[in-house]
Image (cartoon, rainbow, N blue to C red; front, side, top):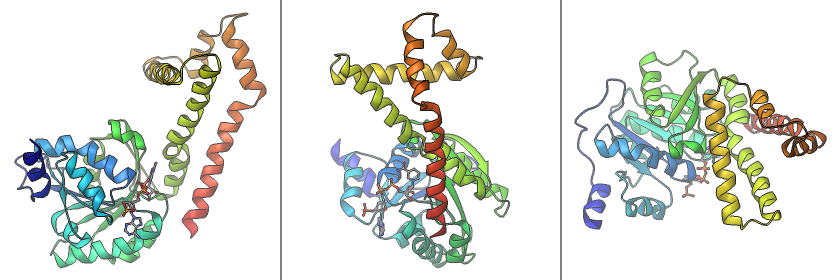
Length: 296
Ligand SMILES: NC(=O)c1ccc[n+]([C@@H]2O[C@H](COP(=O)([O-])OP(=O)(O)OC[C@H]3O[C@@H](n4cnc5c(N)ncnc54)[C@H](OP(=O)(O)O)[C@@H]3O)[C@@H](O)[C@H]2O)c1
């Protein structure tokens, strides 16, 4: 089993048998840190079914070896150039300072491989499309997306920049891949930073808030593991209720605050501490930082 798995990871996969007209035949992940690895894992079920082939490159080889050992259907490439040779669409999952150089390298490699319709998608929070276009020199299509870490469980939210400069077919191809991992919102690049602050950063805010609830349950005497399980379970239930109910969030909250009851006492404390205003300020602070980073 281990050998078969290894073989599947190291070999260059053959052409996929079935591919939707909107789907690229092969997808590359450049940079396999937290986000790159999460994208590989999220797409691996589809690659295993033969919907497309999956390739990856990472500066540190051990990361690729770990992915291989986990049995993921991804072929490791030894250079970014090799990745560009095999993949039709590449997700650039490195940090913002590397985006321009990697864009130039991959665009040239697409050209060297005779590919005129290569697609490069940056997931970086910063580095403008203008800088990417300059680096790519019209050798491939470039765009930006903003993902959430929740893509790892198929519940990602993605902003996809569509400023009308790419053929719709290219946008459709990117969207078709993102839809396998969650929901997609197409928008202008100006809106991308707003989305990053409100949605891309949201898992960080939500985990932080949930940690406070876990600590509160521990303070009341529950073991930490049980407190964690209870808080996550309640949150999941609340999210599903909020999604499926026709009621607004305020109305859902009103439903659980009985007159003279316990919950309204807790809500009163949250109101006195300005909890909702602080959350709004947090989004604003994240946005300001994003704008600052984008200018660098
Ligand atoms: N984390 C999030 O929630 C999130 C959400 C949305 C967007 N993003 C964006 O996703 C991108 C990756 O974030 P991450 O959280 O996955 O970061 P990460 O876990 O630190 O991964 C960074 C990746 O960049 C590679 N890298 C770093 N310096 C490099 C260099 N000089 N040359 C080549 N490769 C280099 C790393 O390779 P090594 O393994 O060799 O170090 C690794 O593959 C960032 O641009 C970030 O803005 C992140």
